[in-house]
Length: 228
Ligand code: BEZ
Image 1 (cartoon, rainbow, N blue to C red):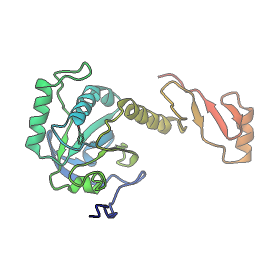
Image 2 (tube, rainbow, N blue to C red; image 1 turned 90 degrees about the horizontal axis):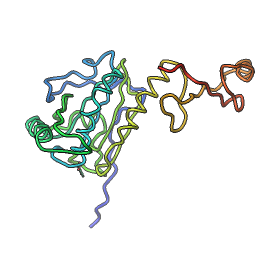
Image 3 (cartoon, rainbow, N blue to C red; image 1 turned 180 degrees about the horizontal axis):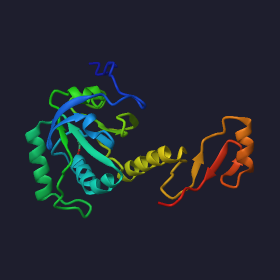
Image 4 (cartoon, rainbow, N blue to C red; image 1 turned 30 degrees about the vertical axis):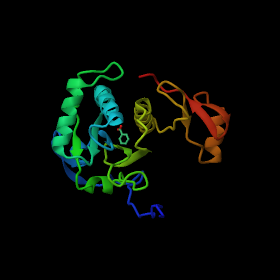
């Protein structure tokens, strides 16, 4: 029997697109996305299923870091294709029974969307049939305060997300916006940043002669940022 999965056309929003709009029922009441979050960053993420171990560790970690993300003006919104009562029961079990990595008694206070119809998950390309046609993969959409998608990360079902990386990516994008710079490989807050390549011969010459940026060559200049 041929078990090859025929490629399907799956629509997915892209970096730079306006985040597709939807209204949804969540564990914190109804939300209108992204309009309810105007002026804030949002990490909108999907997980495969309630009452599964990897997802449980991810939810505990997200909930544990929620204050850090809020301090960065970033809200969290989760989704799975399970129903509201399953979500409620799972979040109650997590709080009452589960310990992980030193975390316990963890209350998930951010909204978790019920998406039994898969309407939202399909809109965001979270159902990837080669991986599963009944569960969402682990997608992460970073949506900026204007409702624009700024970064997208996808993980397969078996791979729990790296939360240091999610936080680093958010801070890097906020820093890039604030200072019109870029961030190099493995950048972390406090490290030098990249000055975007010069767009004219004059700028290239000025850069090479400037004391404020350090250039290895005209196209490769870095600088430090004020500490804050
Ligand atoms: C989990 O979250 O543990 C999980 C979910 C779906 C497939 C495999 C693992």
